[in-house]
Image (cartoon, rainbow, N blue to C red; front, side):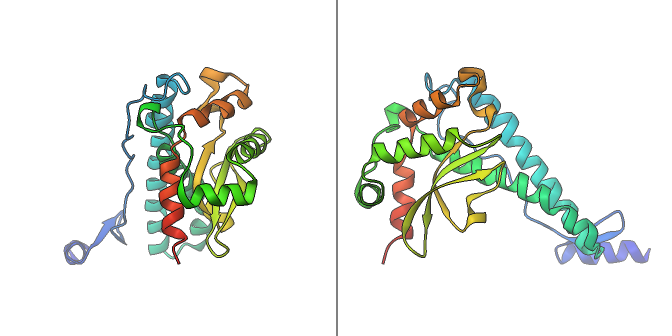
Length: 228
């Protein structure tokens, strides 16, 4: 009876009960909808790949991220330090997978909606200043991305303190924020992003993906973050 009474009071204050342990309601994350059809990036990325990548892989990261956060809340309520520490890798991997893919979908656009159009404005100027040209930047990212061992990402990031552009990689699903950088463009070089279409020829995937790159997203983020 006492436990039931506590549960009612806790629910009224935003605290729930699970297996007799009080926990505060936590935010859950959902799979974002794509701003285009799964087939809209063809022939660069097939509809089959986009469907599997979004509905299966990204959804799995979201599901497991929410599960890890729920387990973290329970472990925190129990003051279980060992469990809290043990959960950090799952939170980083699955939370990073959700963060990275959410950016990735925005980095792409069908050709008829501006995909592949070169950057403009202050971002275009910064690219020319730091890398010499857009083609030089693309060559650098393709080379660096092809060289990622195993699974990971290649990024065009922004150092907000220096207001400078950086080409960087992250392993597995580590988000770029772990290196102190803000993502402008990210290319997924996990095999699930390209293998059904490009087999093991990652350089071909990297070469072609620029045809559907949405530079407008990168422009907007860059201009917002570099305003005086």
